[in-house]
Image 1 (spheres, helix red, strand yellow):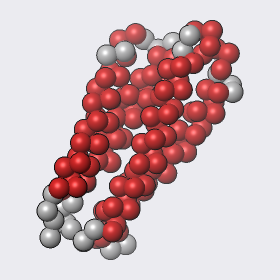
Image 2 (cartoon, helix red, strand yellow; image 1 turned 180 degrees about the vertical axis):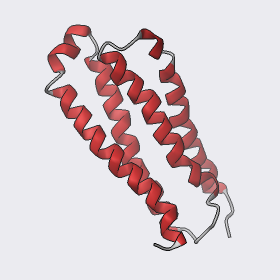
Image 3 (cartoon, helix red, strand yellow; image 1 turned 90 degrees about the vertical axis):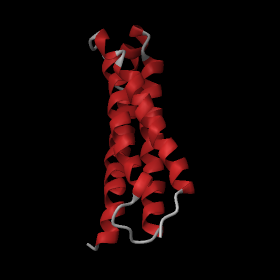
Image 4 (cartoon, helix red, strand yellow; image 1 turned 60 degrees about the vertical axis):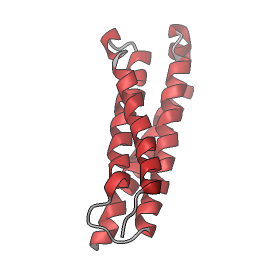
Length: 135
């Protein structure tokens, strides 16, 4: 694997792992746990968690493509931070919603916005990368 391919292997790996877990958790919520989630009034929270989880997994494929199409850069700049931001964001945002929907401790509630901030930071970094001049 060349140095250039390492730049996009991380986002592709993350996309694959987040994609499979997002589909699995979405299916579990829609089928196996639906009655429990509806009874607790948390079906919507589970759906939101799965939606954000999957959207960002798909978007990571675009980040990987962008990094692959760009020049072979040792330090990828803002785009290099998108994957870590989104991975942390999914764990904190979607993860806390999944856990709360399953009856997890209420102290997890304040964790959710931090995940949302990490997701937004990833999108902001994409906008910054669009204007970054990289040789």
